[in-house]
Length: 105
Image 1 (cartoon, one colour):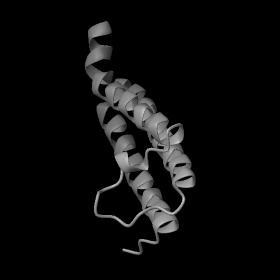
Image 2: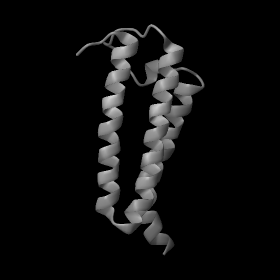
Image 3: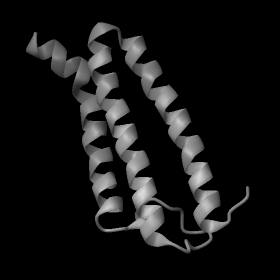
Image 4: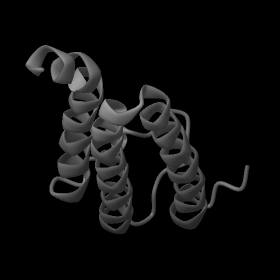
């Protein structure tokens, strides 16, 4: 039983821990350079961007945690939940980039 749980949930749980690390890095330390590409326009409000981006990463970490438990029920359910969460968070990050950097790509 424990082996199955580790097999099914290991990678998504590791992914969740990594996302929590970046959420803390964004929300507490406002280190926005750690998630942005080098060639992008600078951010006008680093504190606001860090807070909103940290919340988005935290939401994605919660989705990843729920998906890891869903993988115990059916692996396809967990994978599809991760993909859906990724698409939604990517759309919100695009909106966030437009709001704080004026990037209209």
